[in-house]
Length: 88
Image 1 (cartoon, one colour):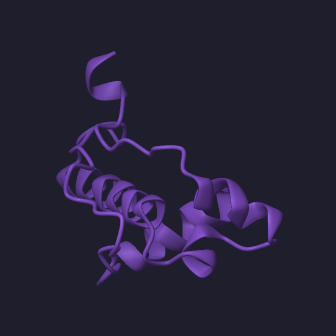
Image 2: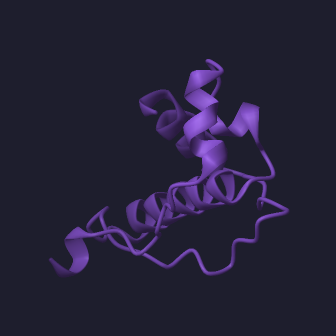
C-alpha cells in the first residue's frame, strides 16, 4: 500500500489494554509507556505529512521509543495527540 500506510507501529501492550478498562487514555493512564510514546510518534508523523503536503498515511517507525520514557508532545503535535486520543 506504499504511502497509504503509516510507518509508525503501535504495539499492543498491557498498559494499552488496561487504560480503557480504567476509563483513561494511555496518555493519562501511563504517560511514560511505550504505547504513549508510539501514539505521540504517530501524531508527529501525521503532522509532518500534513505540513509536507504528502499523503497523511506514511512516515517513520517507532524504533526510538523505550519502555521507560515517552517522548513528550511539543508544539503543534500536542493538538494531533489530543485528536488521536479522542478516537481511542
